[in-house]
Length: 423
Image 1 (cartoon, rainbow, N blue to C red):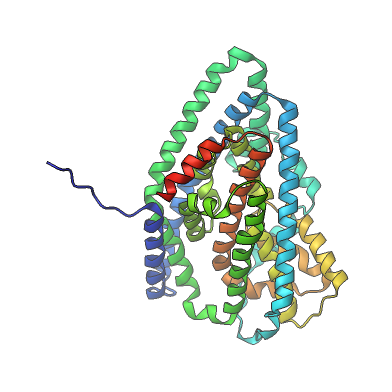
Image 2: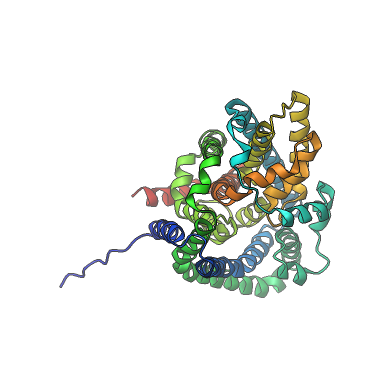
């Protein structure tokens, strides 16, 4: 008797279905406090489930990868190369955002009287208390208490400690093998748990987007619809052209990367969270032929230093707000903005609402009213969905590039895995 093959939706389609259901429910329950509370809790529960496994995966995978590498000079070279790559790509993203916003000049078409200001007091407080300089970020990398860093979800200190711990394991030879075997088991267990958690992703997505639509209402999007369209068009351009050219230079195709990580990109888009994709992204980087040590180092580091989508948004937003207030910025003022954005984006990395905090710390340098940022705060969630996608695909491209440049890349493994998606 022939077995009947059961039909089921793939994870990507399940998440998109959750997105559609969330939008419909949000529109039906507009400004319904009970629904907003329930949907928010449902979405946050999913995010918390993913956050629960992220740091254990990063820590165990990175320690094992660095222990197998066992070379301090190689680790230093990879670190410097990775940071240089991140700085170049994020600077290009800033410039593209500012140039396109200048060319489109959509800010001057906005009637400020139609816009509703959103409360940004929390972001203002963060901007005042956060040290907006690269030096403080670099100093924060070294943890005084690794358990405190784990408890606070501080990614960079965990990456630093794991790298040092991995080198220490490599230096003691066979004595450290029992720890490596244990951490391999931890990593495999966490990836298994991630697979279980992903089954509830559609419900989490429905909750997150439902709460957003219920709070904002679809009608509130009209005054800033042009800005939303400009932001998404710019992000698509960056992915297909800038990341496409970068990939080609190293023998990859951006279309193949998009095909392989499409489910992760849908998840990033619908949740507006890069963190939820990290475990699966690290797993797929190995399946794409990149050595585990490269993926375990580059991807977590990129979640702080390689936020290309956020850079695009900040470049677009700062010029857009200036145009809305009819402030004509000279070339020297815009170059000053670019320089300040490059510094503050690193200084604010990892803080809650980092993109908004960066804008608040930047606009005052050229006389743009801080209150202007409150005008676009209402649509931040919708734009955040797009910029999260850029951040995720940017980190996958970075991992492949660094892996190829270090000769820690298996082309045959890469081609087989890509071919499995094309079938």
